[in-house]
Image (tube, rainbow, N blue to C red):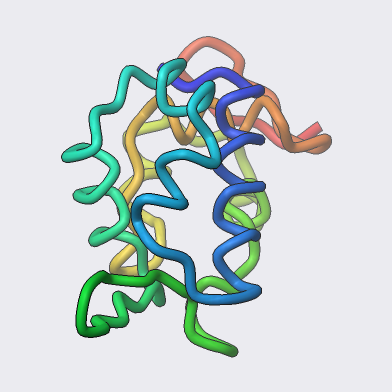
Length: 134
């Protein structure tokens, strides 16, 4: 389960990929505490990078560099904002499973990611299995 510190670390990491192309080795060495805290191996980080929408893998002669495409899906509102809009549109608290089914197509999230986004959002709260606007 991701805690708030790990989610913040991932968000900072993703923001760093918007500036310039970075090799996998540099990505791995730049955040050792984050990868260790998540319990990720290099193979797991490579898989996660491949699953990120809008993240391009630019192959050069000797390595692969990663960078988000300008103006791509990486600039969508954060998950907490998406959840808040869905709950607001429903007009009542929603079960987490129901909320997950209402996320935009192509949004890949786990239940711990949803819970972390809800806990970080100032207008959302979990009440048992329900997500509620405050």
